[in-house]
Image 1 (cartoon, each protein chain N blue to C red):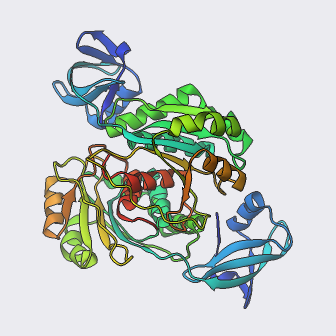
Image 2: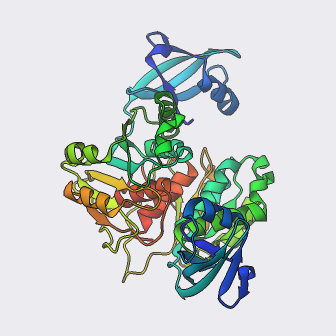
Amino acid sequence: MNMILLHKSDFIDNDTVLITDRRLKHMNEVHKISQGKDMDVGLLNGKTGTGEVMEFNRDSVKLRVKLDSEPPAPTPMTAVIALPRPKAVKRLIQSATTLGIKEIYLINSWKVEKSYWQSPVLNEESLNLQLELGLEQCKDTVKPNIYLKKLFKPFIEDELPGISKGSTSIIAHPYSDSEIMPIIEEENHILPKITLAIGPEGGFTDYEIGKFTEAGFSQFSFGTRILKVETALNFLTGRFYQNI
Amino acid sequence: MNMILLHKSDFIDNDTVLITDRRLKHMNEVHKISQGKDMDVGLLNGKTGTGEVMEFNRDSVKLRVKLDSEPPAPTPMTAVIALPRPKAVKRLIQSATTLGIKEIYLINSWKVEKSYWQSPVLNEESLNLQLELGLEQCKDTVKPNIYLKKLFKPFIEDELPGISKGSTSIIAHPYSDSEIMPIIEEENHILPKITLAIGPEGGFTDYEIGKFTEAGFSQFSFGTRILKVETALNFLTGRFYQNI
């Protein structure tokens, strides 16, 4: 936690917050709270700044906050990812959040096990916690949107063309003989808008690749190594964006 | 496990292996072993190829193997990483391995907790398992070298200049006001040789940065977001290498 993420409900007056939950525990253990100490804070979906410790005890800490800076710019990538196994979902969501990705679609695919969709890691509360931990790690305040799309065909046919409109639309596909993706250069320091699809373990089926192609996606390889989905997303974000 | 990693000790004659351990369990659960089935295999530090299922039962599987292909080329990056918390070490080693990185130094730093060095995840057997899982994931056979360097100063002063010689030597440092790292272009399709240093949570100290600078390293920023070490390594590998 490099920044304490504040909620509107933490405010007890205009510039004072009272914190009592997991954030207090972390502040106590890692930040060594002391009277007068300044800590990095940010208001969920708002500005960032500092919070000065006014009072603290075992059960709560009171900070006087000054919110005067903008959070970092978003990374203009939309990630469309075949739902990975539950234990990978938490890390995937956290790392996508730290990379500044704001639109995350978890979709179905032939090789996604049906049971994954029943996992409690997909509950709103669980996803929300991962998003907040990611924001606290990278000192951002803008919560990404996560969309769960259990039906492949209607999503690809009816929604994806609208979602990917105006972006470079790419399927990362190590199994293909497809060409190596060229570097997409920044133009006038504007980061390129990319929609990136990453398949499940074992890859998308030919039928699925065909449907992505109909939706305007091109298939590229980034070498022959097969990466785990989280590693692939991190690697490809670095491949596409010079700084985040 | 996208490839079954074979050891010389698995061979019962010139072209036949007998597998009985965790690999068998995985093959049974995920690959659905059947008579005559071809599976991707690779000999540790040797060639890759296929293994045809000759016989199998609950306790073992016998494959006839043909090793006729080269493993993927290594990624010419040397990673010098402040030892992260134990639970992050396993994933870091696995993902560095899948990215093709062959030289991994885990080093001490002021902000590395001393207790981390006592963790059983640093035992040879534990590290070895992570390396092998990484190789099986990315279908490589060449085992990376991991070096544990508990003393910062002698490592940086006496060893690092030799290790990083002939490479572009970079400290990733989000806290600095340093400039954004330019893209290092491939020359004649030869991947650039890079030594990349990544600090602990909280960053390297000014003293440590100074020592890296004396050893020929330059400090660069890749944006303001603070990434976890594993995410940073994956992201920066994508930043430096067009394909792996």
